[in-house]
Length: 222
Image 1 (cartoon, helix red, strand yellow):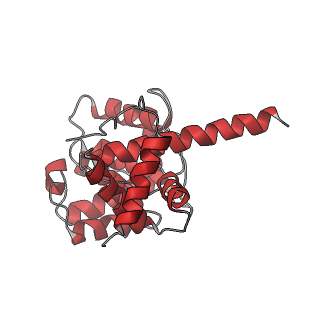
Image 2 (image 1 turned 90 degrees about the vertical axis):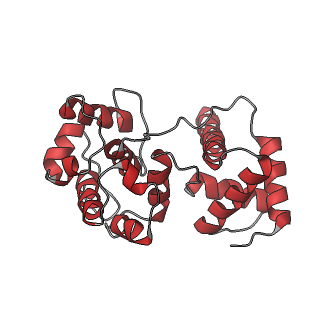
Image 3 (image 1 turned 180 degrees about the horizontal axis):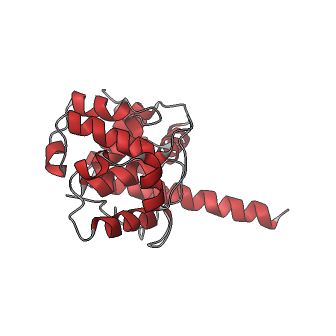
């Protein structure tokens, strides 16, 4: 997609105006740990990230305990478990919008990826159309979390979720599609000479903090 340079310039200006200088850097995900990255990508859908003992982090900690110190880099370890058993291990019985257990979706994605030749993180160093198709063919998983999955493995990119899209729409004062928001932030990151994943994390953190502030303010007035 060829972006209008004026749109990118407006986004750069808004980034410099709105984002605090002390925002945290992208924490880095799970490079070299494809099991953890897949779980994170699926479990984080409409969920709290949590601390080390709960949320997404707590679930991955539960899986790490089950794996007894293994490197968490072999999808075959996930592919042969049933959904209810995995849900118990990770302490997560949340469901996707279609009703499927997130744990079951993780297993199906692991199975599909293994069939497409992906078992280890290194197998996604150069992701292909077939790899993406293996992931998004799971009902409830789509291109947004596919991008996030790759980011968690170390790819510098943008996850065009609700917060990212909302920031871009507010800055440009128009509606944008997820793919356009993603492409615009990639160009913006290049213009600002920072990694796309870092810019993504800063925008996401800023928008989430703003939403929390509005909720607290609204609550204090009711």
